[in-house]
Image (cartoon, rainbow, N blue to C red; front, side, top):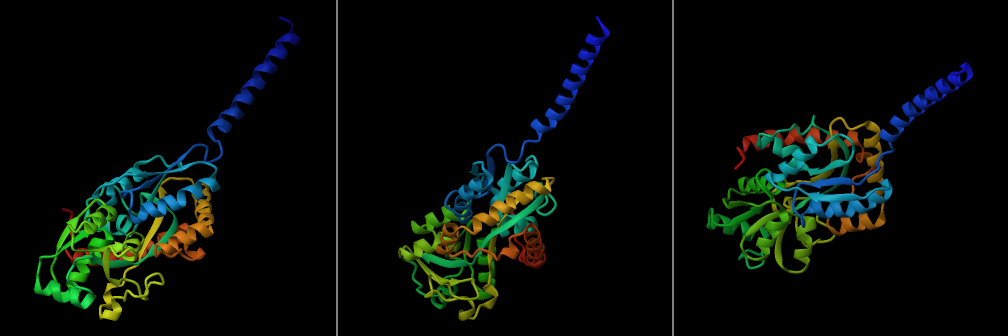
Length: 331
């Protein structure tokens, strides 16, 4: 083999090695996202999170250039689906929807296999809205005062449907009973949607429900509405009074919804998903859909990961002592 040929072979080997070294990271580090993204909803189809998820998924997918697929992984008051997100690879391809119950209350009630703060990275707050106290349409009471009087005259007789132990509709129901000195039976379901179905069928008496689930039933005349946990009456249903107007200001509650990723997810991926969320929340169709469901889109300054983290910390500080003092336990 001549010296010239030997040098040519060595150059070819060296060039191939350099090309391989450059190509490997390029193949492994394709721009995010390069495949579909799973959006885990820890509650059943038909609930408020599901309504919100499906409104957001298509628009987010358009912004990210990949399909965003909603997966309902239910059970344990949202704990099963939330646990799946905590254990997922931190690559941006598994994201978790959650709300006050999954990322605040559950940690004060259940022995979780994850930490609601340290095992997740916040992405954005999506929406927020109050709860409505509703009843089956054949219930004897026609307003809040009549309801309270009936509950006192028939202690521990009425049934209240909940989305599970420790969910917002459960905790607010307990506070309602405490503030009015009334007693009723708590019946847990896997989500608000299944509970509402039983209320419509007359198998339940009362329940606290999200506006997205309850407003259509109220408008259709299928259920009775007694009061809203907001500080002001709903624009879509101004005939429904607030609890404060009935002398129960402690029954103010705003239920918020957010999006999280597993801890360890790269900051640039978090930023890219956040940008897609923010863009989706400016879409007139999505904003109209949320408004029609009685939800508000948070101001732009409250759509950042930092704002969601601060909100969660503040809510934990406020609600954990209340939940523990109430003696709420897993059943």
